[in-house]
Image 1 (cartoon, rainbow, N blue to C red):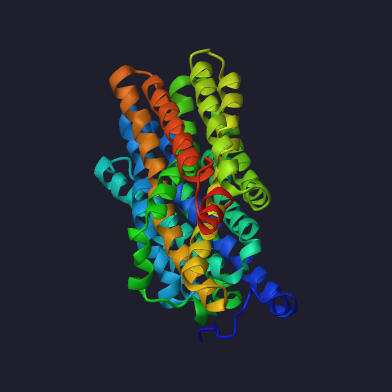
Image 2: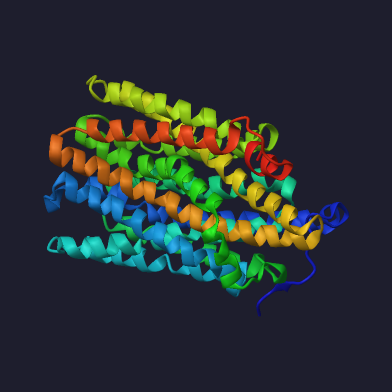
Length: 436
């Protein structure tokens, strides 16, 4: 029987301390478990593609296999966003977790046949995109469980727990494939997926207050702030997922003899663990200032990686890349903290103080999170395609690095113009933009 909670008031301090925080923490823990498995399936191909030498695919074809799950995952984030509001957060988490079984099983079957055609691998890689959709539904759901002043750290922990799934894949899969063969890349995750679905069924809750009309939520698509933040999120999360999935294949192409498989997990792990710190800094200093300086650091980081890629020294390249993972993780936390702050501040401005206005703001923020996370995840596809096209056209990733540096410069300029420059704005605008 579905478990629904009708009486939920997280912004009431007495309610929060007496029972709210315990229920919220329990739902956060098992949301993280399911989302973690979503990321593992979503990014499986970042390792599988490096182990497909027997198929004699070109570098560009392999980058397509890595890029396609990012594309499909980003598209799925839009409908997944509305899943918790329509069906309940617990119910939707169960279904979205169990859907991961499909790409895992198909991968295990396909790689056992050396005659499997390339087009079928493309289809299976595309189906792995369901793991990317899990992020949007998970974040949209957790938004409702926490009060405004704790959403930065709560969303940061939820996202980080999912993001670490990339590290799990890149740490465990080379060992599993080396011991059990390529088919084990799919079979290995099946029992974990089943456990995640069962935990969501038995330990998570649905919130009646989270139910919303999809048409009401979709009004955020007409707001400029949704698309500004989407652009910035391409620069932060898009960079994280793009670099995470591209690094193993990029390293193999640039440094074929280097032990890249043994250390590929480190960057995604750094980016994942630092994400809550980005949310915490945004809670204390404001999301916009943290995001602004972070984009400056990302621009410098990509120039360092570009230089290191031509040095012939893998370890210099590896260390330079860690700066990109570090800054993308901080930016993930700070930009995600900006989203609920912006939409809840606007709700208060439009409807006044009170629980109804706060709930409306959470619904708007929840919908915006889905759209923004969907557009942001496109960065994972674009980064992998940029590397693939760069190798195909120039035999080097240099054109891609130049494009990334220019993009971070554009993100920095947009953040400054919209959120941190000193202009004559209203009190509400200053809350929504300058100190979010």
